[in-house]
Length: 275
Image (cartoon, rainbow, N blue to C red; front, side, top):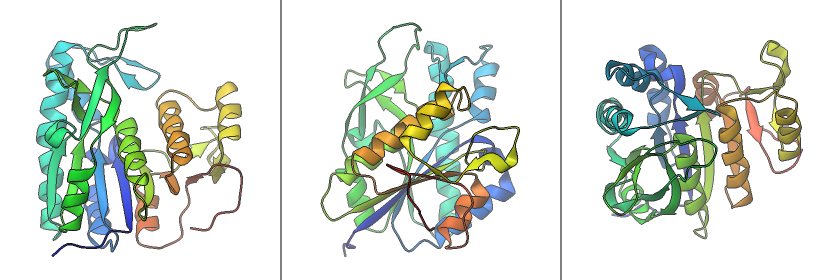
């Protein structure tokens, strides 16, 4: 029997929580109590870096995005599409959630173009070209939770590594197009949210709009991997995603189970928001 879907949460998890067994267990426990269907998108973080290093390759990043040569791609696919994805699926199954692990290649979920060389050659990195959300909706309607790895393809047989934040935002945007379904996007990262100054814990920005983001970016307050993450957030808001939250695992768990949340809400314009 099909379930009626009127709201979906897209939850992206990455960073150090991927290596913290106890916190990951708590996170999956919170997910198992969700009454709202969700899609889990994961990155790889240090696990990917460690495997890349075993291939005798030094991980390289530009503005928080990985440079992926052919040998690095092998390691990235092995870890993201293999070990991490299936480990998460097994953990969710243990919590009573029927999960299905997929990549962007499977069912042609996410097709990408290989990024053109501009200032840097990112190698086998994919920029999202098209998203097919129909298989995801079918799984959710049948009570199955998709667990997605951001490995994509170009439609010509070439695997590509796509930024997990961009991947999650693209899934959210394409689901938001569907009438009658509200989409919320959650980014779980190492920090408690977005800060005006990382050296000052009390400078956490509770509500961030695009004007404030641009101002903080211009002043060098927001750097590296947070830049593409927030760019994705504002793109998603403009294209129909209703709510976006950015925080660490502890606070995202609080939000998911309905307790007081202390992190950053990403909004179209400065306004009061209650979570």
